[in-house]
Length: 365
Image 1 (cartoon, rainbow, N blue to C red):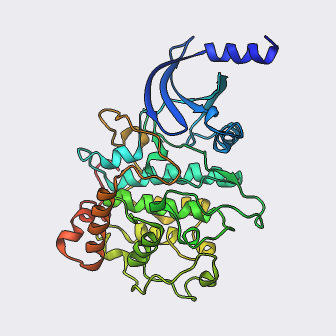
Image 2 (cartoon, one colour):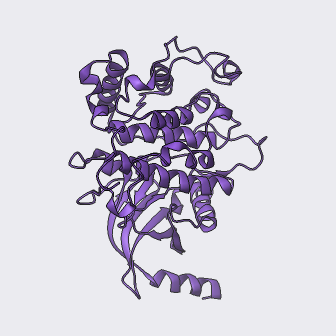
């Protein structure tokens, strides 16, 4: 055994796998612990043998970027070791994710709670973008929640560097419901604005407690976006009709965000609207977002330790690149709910948003 093999074997002995908590086509996630201290960890075993050309590019990217990114709102990579035909990533253990919290109907969100989750998301994302890394798959179940309430951005399998603005990138990234219109129209040249659109969708989902723009196909996704935000004109978004996959998808009037988010403050709606601007160059960036008046108005963000938490962790499978956990019928049902809300400003349609009163300060804020 040479020195490299011995070092790898020693690292492998440092970590013990206890139980499987998730599995996808290319990876299995275990809850484990450090042999010497008993500290809980997550061990992501990537099945290298699944790939004809060796190691999957997403695994290489995940290791590369997580080694570079050290921030309290980005998941920490603790170690890497190989075993047989598998590559194992040892990550800090996190109790749940934002999707689980959103779906837990026993939890009540205060406006200050949503503000706290958004602040941590923007902080982690600003750090990624400052280091020229696009995440390209932000969604609630890739925002993990630690036992102390800290939110951490995870799953960098689709991440990539973007320092060269003239370099072509694939448009087949970001889970559909959180994918911006420029990617749906086939843009191969894009920026950190794609991640900001995803954050805007997550922001809306935290208020609605259901996905904001749940399209059933790429074409339906565009219709869902335009139904909610209006069909863009050349004045709104210069040049979008020249994008590679542009196709007219119908004319929809612009609906004020206030019609759906009836309980939100003016600052809330302003920040949300700046995340969901069609013209990518006009979208707010993560650094600007952190200085937005929304974060400095009452109520102030909840301390992470005071945020709502799931009572128990539910096992969930790893998702594919563009796979949604919801089955088609559930996605269709949610889409229909949203369509009704956007087309009919009835009391019933507004009831979910009204649960959050952004105009009143909560006790102890």
